[in-house]
Length: 164
Image (cartoon, rainbow, N blue to C red):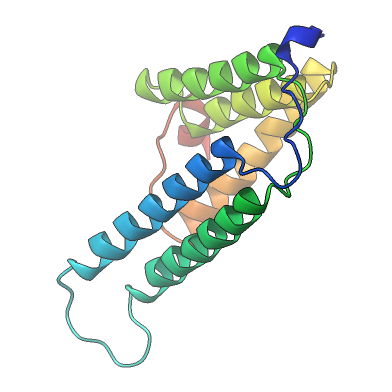
């Protein structure tokens, strides 16, 4: 559980929300970076939509979110923030670290995905670790088969992936 010290004081109505303005600025910077990076790609001309289309759509979407977020932040229209749950953040970050370590050490995509799924489920308050690990394994196998066999894209292989 979190203490009352973790709770963020509510924003006064009508006053600009500085944290939300900072988030809007980061979203806009990310949109500009994606737009610039896509613009500098040198690809052969294609007919119709090419590989540059989707990054431009994402950049435009992020820019729209940035502007909407900035407007709401300037007006002070954000609802009060919830308290911070350190345990959930540590579990999710630990799951990502385990994913990176397992893939880097040759554990493979399926096991790494199952560990990340289990850690994320625990972060959201679920206590059925064995069942969540099994669900993560099934999802990992499905994703691996989809990418490896159907789309022919290579994912990091480990002991389980070599059996498939």
